[in-house]
Length: 121
Image 1 (cartoon, rainbow, N blue to C red):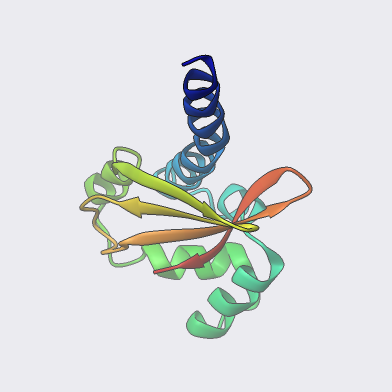
Image 2: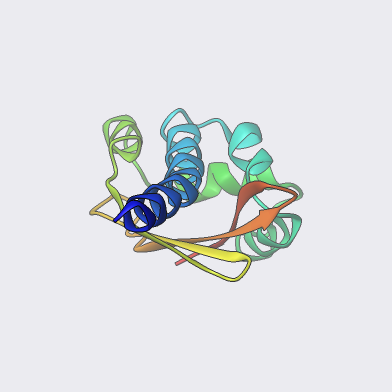
C-alpha cells in the first residue's frame, strides 16, 4: 500500500511541471508578451515559428500568431484548460481545452530540468 501511495505521489509530482510550463506559456501569450513566450520555447520551436510567420525574430512571430485575436480572446488564452499531461522519455505532452488559437496540444522537452515548449499542435 505504501508503494502505491509513493508511486501516485511521484507521478503527480513529476507531471505538475508540464502543466506549469504550459500555463506559463499561455499566460505570456494572453499578455501579448512575445519575449517571455519565446523564453519558454526551445530554439527549434522559435526558428519554426519565425519561418512560418516570416519574421526576423521570435517575439515578432508571436505578435503575428496573436494578430487575428481580439484583446478579449488574447485574455482568454490564460484560462485555457491544460489536461492529461504525459511524459514519454524526454518529451512531455499537455492537451489543451478550447482556446482562441485552436491549439490542441503543447509538446514540451526537458532541457536541464526545465520543461520548454518545443511544438505547438
